[in-house]
Image (cartoon, rainbow, N blue to C red):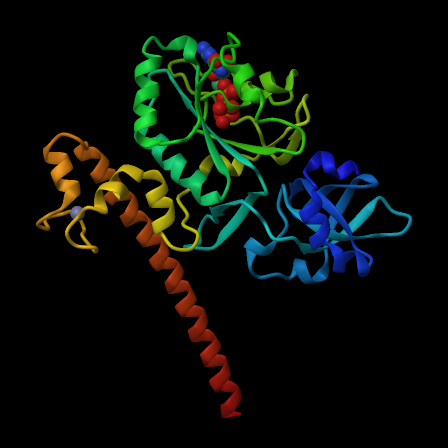
Length: 351
Ligand SMILES: Nc1nc2c(ncn2[C@@H]2O[C@H](COP(=O)(O)OP(=O)(O)OP(=O)(O)O)[C@@H](O)[C@H]2O)c(=O)[nH]1
Ligand SMILES: [Zn+2]
């Protein structure tokens, strides 16, 4: 099948049975632009529009996004399909919608790897990297760390050790797109049927890397502005790009401003990023130890003995506070919605 190239597999095929019975066919969203879509189907690339039901959908997270697998109805005699259902996502990035507190918009879905690109020049910042890593773990996909612009760095090994300390077990590569260093090692992630997203601050070389992997210039690279080494946003629409060797990359401008967003309980993403603190905490005397002043706290002991850096615990606490804050807001929204529902119900009964 043609869509196998885009990652369609037996599991998806099996889950589609009832949709087939209802005359629907599978499609993957390649481009999204203001509610209009380009999708790939067995018949090739077609335009897509939302069904009335999706059009009036209130929950923005339920709307189709780039990377989504959807069930569509072909329209006879037209190069167009109507999107009826979004299939369950195996990974996603949610961006806070500007101006609202907790409402989210899914900016990419169903990717296998999250590439976190951080530049090895003087903008290198381990805390920022750690935050990207948390976001990556929360998406449900596998993070891969790319330290870019290795040609500008003369202490790459030190940096690699620094990264290893915060990102246990995460594959990390130092590369230079300009000099072709390390590129062959990361090519293996971009095989046919595999989808990646690329995260990282502006100017770290994301577009340059994608172009290098692609073998041609599909994304525009802005030369760094004078006076600083940051580039400028060049991509303007959401799209899924097929690379030379058949791998796919989702490139969306929204992803670059991704804020912290916790899906479900805060615990998981935190402990994925802070495995060291998590391990130590198992040895604390109290199970609910906050590692602030409790007797028998293994985390504080590790700081005293120099095994753990104080800054690590500070970052841990900071991230925890932020995640709690977002959680709290989400709960507040749920409470508000419940309240509205109750009100509506009471009104009905009063009449
Ligand atoms: N020295 C060096 N410069 C690089 C390398 N890769 C990219 N650059 C330069 O870094 C600048 C920014 O590169 P981009 O690829 O546009 O960065 P980006 O991350 O896509 O930036 P945004 O589109 O703003 O998010 C450009 O001037 C590139 O030429 C590298 O490996 N070494
Ligand atoms: Zn403790």
